[in-house]
Picture: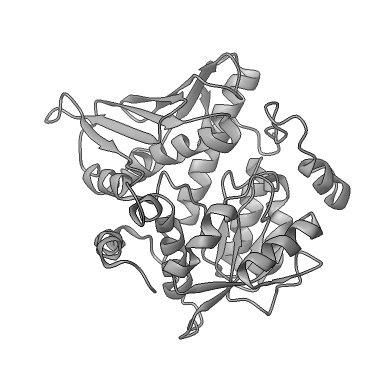
Length: 352
């Protein structure tokens, strides 16, 4: 894996935090990993990730998009082959990355052939728009020993890796977090994942979520998370990357952890965006998942509980176990009224 030495050392310092492998993988190729990309155009992180593949030992060889002409255009930028059907990459790639947002209600279909093949899958946030679909994906992954990554750049960076390493064993009194925001579904989820990584995965799972805001598709908004013996808040505001300040008896004023975007090349790429790809390459080569299947399910439940709070409960707390299995959160974005991507997915795959 090709990394700048300064960032590679930081990344490997936190390798012990990786969750245990779901099962031994077949040996990865010694050379570059062949990666197939799904959902490369509309609201897709692949526009950010694709140029960073030169910092990894991976290469994009195939791609698919719900809009074939957009797949062809993306393929030309990275010397890849566009395929006609979403499952046409099976047998041709070593791993799969899905970069889009609007596809989340259909991820259980799009990733099925690749999970059944036991391939490493990166499934972009917010993973699924219902608990039942999330469980379908995770059940497939478990059954076929497919390691998966469900990332946010707000999880895979040095600041939150330090928070995740510092928090276990601490008596937490409360915490305050922030994240950049334009709507809850696409960017609010980054703050939710940050909180789960830094606090819930350190031994303090979330019990309930309350989400208060004028609406879920414009800032500001405040989420309150109930844990076993304390609460924390996430303030969703414009113009912030991500922070968390954790208060303990020893750190009464709070221990701060601030995501830094990096100044100038290559730091403006390697501080926030590249670590997600490095984490995925490590997962693909070693089979070690940064989060277990249960942790992925937990943060999906937290995300859905927040949505249910603001949509159906007037901002009052919703316990994670109160979110019905088949309840679906919205996917169309009121602040992107002209985007037709979900209509294309519905036409091809059915409503949800």
